[in-house]
Length: 411
Image (tube, one colour):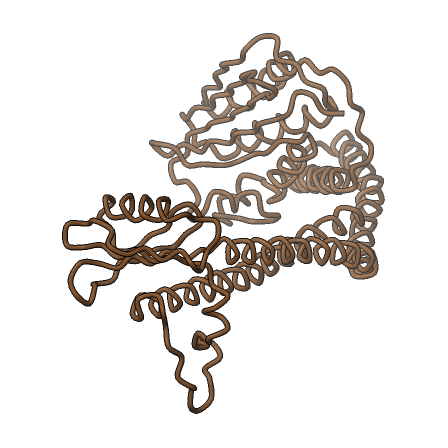
């Protein structure tokens, strides 16, 4: 229990840390990319408006932080080339004096290829370009190298991801170290509750056995009466509730499991046959659709308890003249058990609430049927202990369907 709580706390905390780090890193790198793009856009605008030879008047007043103007030093450090085209797209002037890696012929080829694309601005081969109207007609194409900006963006991304990974790892160690202390009070409280349920269940077994034995002796001596029948019915009811509580406690503790090869087909057949007389007394048809040779590794007592809970639930809450259908199928890695019964008026609300402890969708009907309000909770605990799940759904014509998917291989 402590380990399960500790694991859940660690997983939850690390999910929150991961989301927070991802948001911070996303904002930082997104803002860096936007700022770099704005900077290159302002540089292109300055170069294009001046024809590649910008003038830099001394700025007056404070400089804005997010849109710092391009200085002369920044312009001199920029790598760019300019190609002026006439009205027919022929180069009439090419300036490659501000970049050493591009020749005049290459610059003109870049300009011609960009013009054929028909876009005013774009990016190609590490250059960001834009076309500006020429002063005497034609166009001026400015190509600005953004390879340095790309390296800067990738460097910031790599450093931030590295720092984020280190912070994530340190946070994992810190959460793991503190989780034991954080879950200790909760784990102790839950363990005390489970011990109380287990101890109380075992203590109740003896007086219940004595009550039933005394009732038998009373009926042998004085004959059955409505009082003795009432005592027996309530004692049997309390015994069933006690067994379900003990089943829940054992499932949550994860103790007492005897894992072995179980023939679920034979177990389902035998359990369904055992409930056939009770169903017949209420004029309920109990039908079976059970696939042969369905086996799994499990605790046979738990599997029998699961089948008994679902069938008992079906017999109790199926109206006279109704039908119960038991299905069993073997699928890839799973055994799927399904118990479906007709019901004139299914409980209102979400069918998943049927698995809540002591939940009663219809209190009067549940009491009259003799239910405990805890059997389906025990069924879910058994299914989850087997590495599977159990669900409830309302089908057509007032049908209630319980489906348990159980892992066939479970150590």
